[in-house]
Length: 315
Image (cartoon, rainbow, N blue to C red; front, side, top):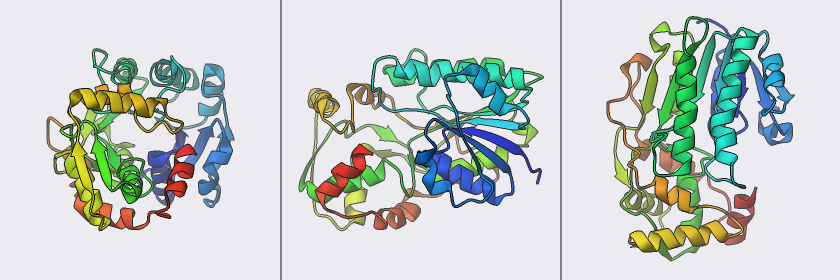
């Protein structure tokens, strides 16, 4: 295996933390760029991991931090905007600056995290911005910069904000009104996502390609919530909402102190997050079933007191 020097953006998040652990164990040298290194405290236990405070909006600083590295991995993404323009800044302008910094620093390998459903003509601002950013990165592929793009469906695993979020909500809501219950998803384990990233690093067969990443089975959102309740041993009345009610529920959550759902998320759920083709054979493994991994992760959830949920959601 070729040992590489890898600069990672977005490494303090859910996927990033899992990816860093895997790449570190494989012996790669890792530099993590973070706006706030304190958010990376859970990674301080890894000796020799280089955590650098950096302004990710500064293209010159990015080029400086990329210097001397073999590979750049951009995992940065947001599901909600705190202020108008955040999607454009994070999903479009940052990839543009990353590509520019890669050229200036002589980086020859770039891995980019997009999303299933990313489309410049998508229904939601999230999808549109992700689509424009993905297009910028794809256009940058060439002789001097080998690009691979990943488009995962919703990602689950220990420490996620998907199945675990529903688990926390179900613990204190005996009647659970569920918006967009018929939305189709094909969840993939975070462990399979990071395996795909690691397997593609030095594999020329992945250069210039875009890969959809999905688990082995398609579910409706309601089926997933029912599965979470069953795993936790909770008897809950799950009430599926119609389209108009789903919209107003998203609006209400958008106005709440804890932003768990927005009208833009509601629009994203109108597009099925389902892969059009089987899991890519180039990675050499089959994705794990949600039924295998989810019970273990849900069993590790913290306190079932609603106050604990509210406090954790605000972090």
